[in-house]
Length: 232
Image 1 (cartoon, rainbow, N blue to C red):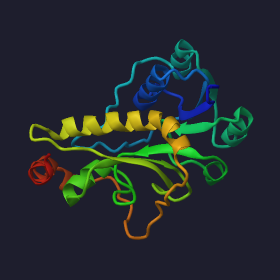
Image 2 (cartoon, rainbow, N blue to C red; image 1 turned 120 degrees about the vertical axis):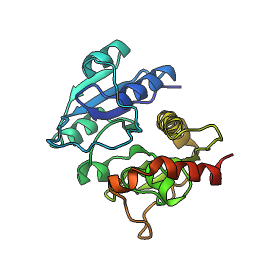
Image 3 (cartoon, rainbow, N blue to C red; image 1 turned 90 degrees about the vertical axis):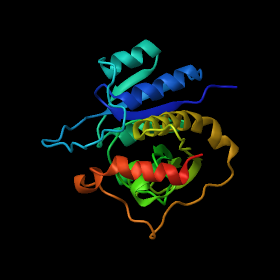
């Protein structure tokens, strides 16, 4: 069986999720992988949450060097040229490992795979884990093909994230993150088994913004209440 061609979209800086995804692809034995790195724009006043819940510390190594160590191809890109580059590469699968909003042209012309740290369309938007806890809704992970609507597109797979008696908020967040990486890598095996993809478009659930600190300051108490209600 021939190796699938996999394209990975990310940033042109060391990036934890990208490194974890590439580790997963290599562990699975995928060899025909090319990374397309978009410019990373540092905000002047980046949002600083009270509780940082996403692993962010990457190995301090340039992304092109990281790819070279894995034997993966690498190319710098931009919003203006990435569509042409992907067309030329002609990947079987295109994965987002790190990127902001992509141009509409890109998501309309390619089936791009993303993971979202929540059940779509129930928990759309930013800080989905935190909002799921505060709102008392199920915690999970969704892999999906993206489209021009934020956190929508078409369903590939969803998994429930269990909550246990001895969990802390950060233990749960780590379990969710690890599931995201695993599902994103495994999507290459899942997709060929599917015959249809459910639409995740919905007008019922509004996409959330970053959790305001006035709400976030009580997050750990909210988590303890959530745990008592939903623990397995």
